[in-house]
Image 1: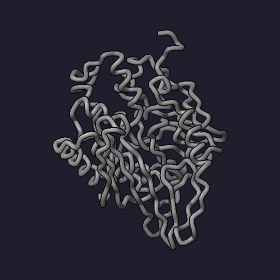
Image 2: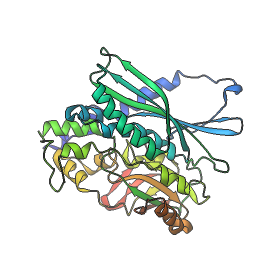
Image 3: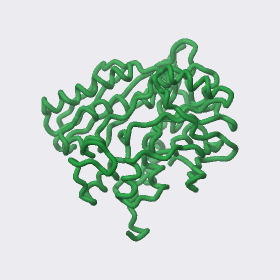
Image 4: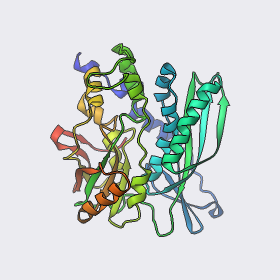
Length: 349
């Protein structure tokens, strides 16, 4: 394939530059400051959750959708994984600011409400609620055949900070810190517009395993993403914990959301699993595109003081995240680099 025609997220229909421009236009028109009785918004532009202080309490709020992974669920009539992902995509963003999940409201937009499909979504949603330690308190189901084809799934979650715990914003990240990575479970719910386009273009049989895989590739891709609430809970209150990052859409560039005036040198990032290598070969994707679109095997990052690495790993192990490992360090400079691959990213957008 000619280099100019290689597949990218933009070529599949998701242009990050256009998204950034559109969001900038939207935010430029939302200049409103509510009265003090509505709470004090904490300014954290581009972070994983919005923070508001009401009296002595601070709340974290986030919203996200499962995205086009639901299209694959429709094709396979396999809904439980994406039901669980409604929780996963939201509570992991709360965990990335050190908040304890409290409540979630879900959103289901559909052409036709199918009881069997809703039941399967509900089973996955219930699993996610238990893993994320969060309550479902309401939601919105809208039958809007003129707006959506099939089904769209998402939600909004609220978390809080237990007494004595402050938000983990990344402000204390500094050169000398160590970056710990916790493995992902496959692709989670990111990059599926590109992924699905490649499946169609290459005419992949979703009922057969990929090379080196186990079970139908369609079922493998629909596994729910891993939930990291327990990892955040285990170490969020420690002064030595300086930052968290949920490696979701945007890949390793998500680290810049913590601080843009240091450099995250990911010199020990492990080789990604077979599913990522398979996809890269399937689409002739450049490494730069892979690492800025997918999680590449690490779904959550904890940035800690160098002196606390082993103590942090022990705490994570007790919380059932014994697979946490050192993947890099913080140094002077800016951006994110993977020196062993010759990759550098200057920012998040």
